[in-house]
Amino acid sequence: MAEKILKAKKREITTKGAVKQLRREGYVPGIFYSKGNEGIPFAVEEVELNKVVFTSERNIIQLTFEDEKDTLGCVVKDVQFDPVSDKIVHVDMQGVTLGELLQLEVPISFVGSPVGVKEGGILQEQLHKIEIECMPRHIPQSLEVEISELGIGDSIFVKDLEFENIKFITPEDAVIVSVTAPKAEVEETTEDVTEEGTAEPEVISKGKSEEE
Image (cartoon, rainbow, N blue to C red; front, side, top):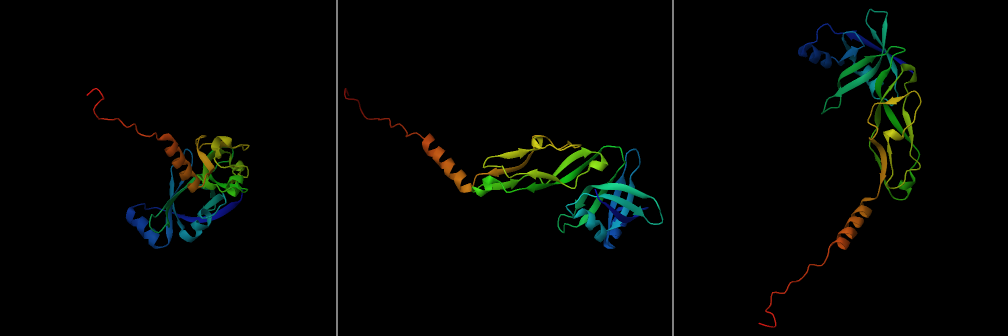
């Protein structure tokens, strides 16, 4: 896994007013977490943070602070976005320690063109990231999922994946990707079932009997 350097500055004041001022100056507030230690509030330039967040790669980040020689190895744990502008408003970094298991999300990369799509089916990508647990040295850039053999009505679940040195945290019954029948075909099938399943109503005569 590649490493990237991210320069930051520690935040001494963490009030709402101070955070707003940082954002106006083009910085994003964040917190560095590591096992057994208190969180370290920091701020990083938005343009630099975008380079490690808006990418399909998973990198170990070397977080460096002003006037300090030591760096902190970490990965992006959580990112909060503004609901209107989609700009990053906060980031959590999780410390990485060699020899200790790490939980994180990694992107899924789909490989191949499903036979079901060639037959007119619709590809439904349910998950684009999946949560895993592994050693830092085994963190993958992405998990490649082969989908060429998927036919109409087929699905791939988390439990179907097999990768060495990785444990999946995402529930095993979660659907990752599937191929569904075309909408018109589904509607036509539904109509057929409705027509076949509806019986003619019985007509009950209310006229007088012959004896009357």
